[in-house]
Image 1 (cartoon, rainbow, N blue to C red):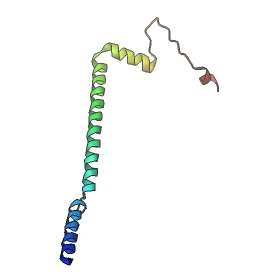
Image 2 (image 1 turned 135 degrees about the vertical axis):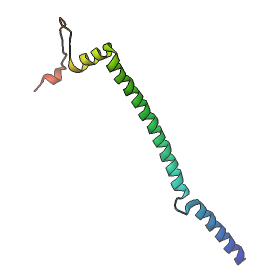
Image 3 (image 1 turned 90 degrees about the horizontal axis):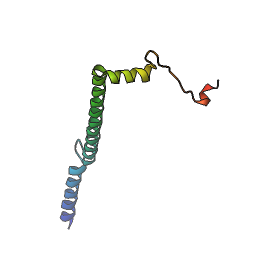
Image 4 (image 1 turned 45 degrees about the vertical axis):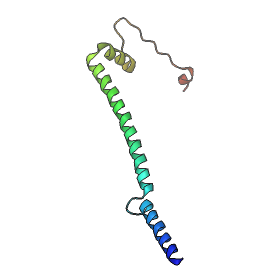
Length: 95
């Protein structure tokens, strides 16, 4: 009877060590896999952002209509003969 208990304990210990022992446990492995999935998703998002910014930069270099739109929106530029009207919200006029 004692021999069965000892063998059972050793087997349970071996299984526990295989699952949780060593340099990296199964829990560590699961965490790392989850981290890899998060990092891969971040890479996909960043690649999408880079592609979008690359298209925008190309449009600014080659498309005069895009360049004019950005100049008008960003710097308030107008063409000769045009008038610029700025709408100011009522609460921003207070000191």
